Amino acid sequence: MEYPFTRKRRLRASQAIRNLSQENNLTVNDLIWPVFVLDGFNRSETIASMPGVQRMSVDVLLDQLTPLHEKGLNAIAIFPVVDDEYKSDDAVEAWNPEGLVQKTVKTIKSALPELVVITDVALDPYTSHGQDGIINEQGDILNDVTIKALVMQALSHAKAGADVVAPSDMMDGRIGSIRDALELKKHHNTAILAYSAKYASVFYGPFRDAVGSAGNLGKSSKASYQMNPANALEAIDEIAMDIAEGADMVMVKPGMPYLDIIKTAKDHFNVPICAYQVSGEYAMLQSAIDNGFLEEQKAVMEALLCFKRAGTDAILTYYADRVTQWLNP
Ligand code: PBG
Image 1 (cartoon, rainbow, N blue to C red):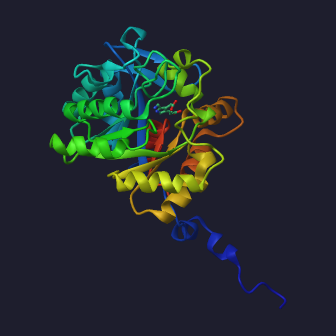
Image 2: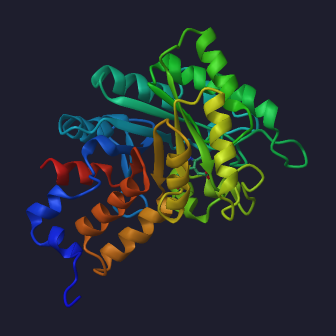
Image 3: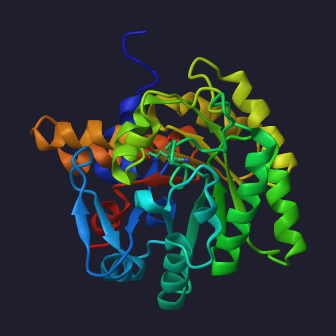
């Protein structure tokens, strides 16, 4: 043979034929925007470890959100920035019906009823020690005691009008308890997005700065409940358990260093797979962009398209606001 019979380059010859033969696409329907919410009015703060991301009071957030929602952004995930005076060992503020998250959900749902509002179910914004659960005197995180608190927190979110509650705490058995409680209280349509494969990752560092829990947590780790980054098969068990307990969607977190886990999840399960491009991934990309080492739009779009290729149905990304504008200017 004097010439190559198969020429893969034929389908790469023009933009039009590349478009025709493209396997995966990123659209605004794939995006969930994580937002950091402050109490009060007319407040916005920059975050040193996440340049380009802000903490905002709900009025400022709504000003940004309304045009984004008009351009097709479907969903946000709310993360509260809680003052130290509201933190305690038993995290009771987590289910205060007039708490920051609950008030924020009500305000956003009444202004933008079609927007999907996702809330984080975990105690770390509310514990004085910054762990996701309740601890004993030795500092052990108490699984079953924590579940009782998570159930109350999830119910208070559902009551405030959250469309989706997202337990990110990694306690065993919490999905089943939360589903039971939601059904009993007639929140039949409140969906559960389970952070099923959530790893004990150093890439959450900038987030902990953003919500102000880094100081509370200090040097203690979350490795007794979040997964070991060395493990892949264990993620299959975690996801299977959460689906069996009633999860409607599952999450893999972090994202980009864990694309193999996303692919495994997609191959094994039929529920939507979400992935979180976490704060540390954002910080890495944005630092390179701010230094002029990477082109912003191309770098971000390629990274997000790779999430799609791995099998992600919806991506939590701090770029969701910018990407919505790039896709639908
Ligand atoms: C807390 C929570 C964390 C993130 C989302 N929910 C941090 C943690 O587990 O310590 C991290 C998100 C990010 O890094 O962007 N339950």
